[in-house]
Length: 288
Image (tube, rainbow, N blue to C red; front, side, top):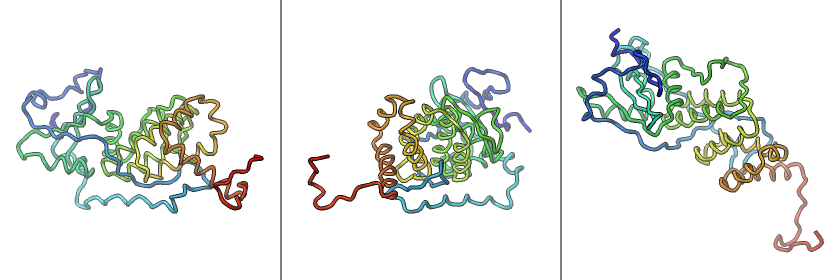
């Protein structure tokens, strides 16, 4: 295969010959680029993060993620390898990374397919994704070629990963939200499954909760509900370990604190530990 037809990834700080883009690929400064804008949330539901015995008040049942579209039966791996190479510029500043991939694989992501259809037949094939996370997009490409991805070299399928810093949780969460944006429910399911195999510290769980509640819509109970359930069950113990950071998250992200409180109150009501208020609820007992 010609060198120009081989997928490449250039990571910032590395300059081996095998990772240098072809001269003709970047020399034309006047070439047309297709740029994707800010991340949009298109959530899809998924299995639970932790075991739960209560649901949020506005959630009756979680719909399942739509089944991934079936591939064209007449399309084999050789068809992918003989499709045009697309240059993808991911990230910005010091993190900017140039990646290349076969167009046929990129077409499986609806959002990317829309951008690719804007290419002229004889023009440059380049997409600018300056707002995307380099690591998450690299895992997306790995998934497109292998139907799985890894974020650490020691990751073993089926095994639990210990994560004290919270990096692993956040990396999987970024892949989950990228998969939502690209329209790849199967990659969402894989990322969500890997999240549940990570054992982390209270600080890591708090950072993960913040990311989830600031990067997903309220309708995405698939990933939000397990987070709220976890903190509703453990906050009386964990808040002492995370100090004022728990209070800070509750104040800065009201949806998180509301969901946690809802689960706690629903449990009390279910267990019959809430006193019934007779008469007008506006009258407060003075002897309490």
